[in-house]
Length: 266
Image 1 (cartoon, one colour):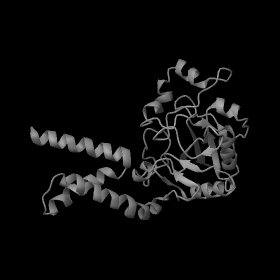
Image 2 (tube, rainbow, N blue to C red; image 1 turned 90 degrees about the vertical axis):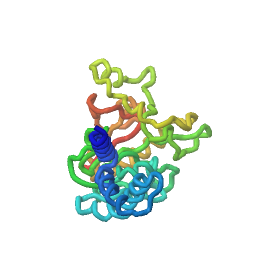
Image 3 (tube, rainbow, N blue to C red; image 1 turned 135 degrees about the vertical axis):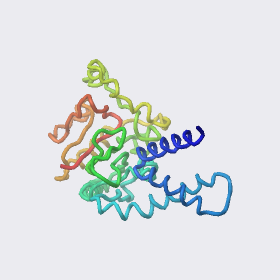
Image 4 (cartoon, helix red, strand yellow; image 1 turned 45 degrees about the vertical axis):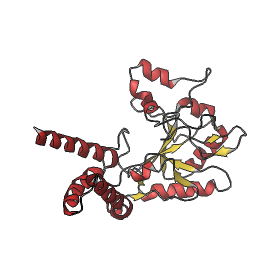
């Protein structure tokens, strides 16, 4: 019975790590093998072995193997950074080369502003159609979520976020704005705001949504010919007076997009 429970526990952990990081399950398997080869005994030996192997795989192996699958990690610069480095450590920061070029071109358009491109979930490094949960479509290297732009009380653009993850703190419709969220709820799509459970903590509550900064970021993205679609919630599209046909509504089956911007290649 004890052996069966151990196997079930290992299987659960294998699946969980694979779902969250794509490579974690495989690393777990190898860590058990290498921990047996490691002759020195100490507390948490298996955990330490896993962490070492996982960091080696994530930082030194995966970036060199992913190009064989048509993907590369997002190139961080002074203007392009993860909203939280957990996206890098969880291997959720891979895109097709064309998307890196799009970000680089957008960066140049923002050079004289205080706006930075802060990215959230992108894609896993390997295999098309491998799901990056909880997203429905981040499975081909063409998609990327970006943070909204915020400002401080003195009207200065900031790179800070309103949650640890970058998701889940919404810029909700005002009283006179169209409320697509309620429309989706009334249709029974109760998952529509599920990001509110994925903030991992709300921070910087005094920050204010920057209409000017967010509109500048979006318009800079729209200048790229390789951009296929951009998703943002309808009330924000109207509030920012955006009319470009590349700005689409994502549908009630997805999640609300007034806490982040979704972009994807053609």
